[in-house]
Image (cartoon, rainbow, N blue to C red):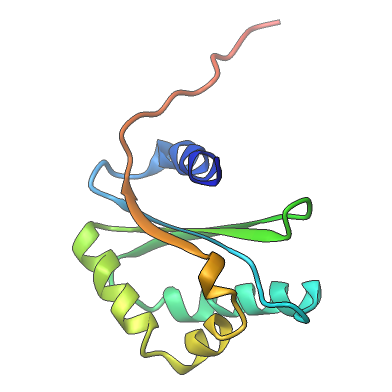
Length: 125
């Protein structure tokens, strides 16, 4: 169910993205003892890391209070640049500090290609 939900979010974001774009979707939670404020600051700090990687297009992240989980969606120009950014992130000290606070056993990380998309029809009143 988690994968279906994050895939749906990616489809919504796909409306203004090239068909060659790659969506990096991470669904994670932080380890016990990391406050919500610390989690939010950690997620925000990743902006300064990813925006400098080649192929970066956009990043959105979402929090579920119900599940105490985060979904992070980064859009890359293509799959090769997405993979390259993953390698660079795993070598970046600031990113590694954030990753060390995440529960890696309960993290889903993957790359997706947009397959379909639909929008609500506008109705006139």
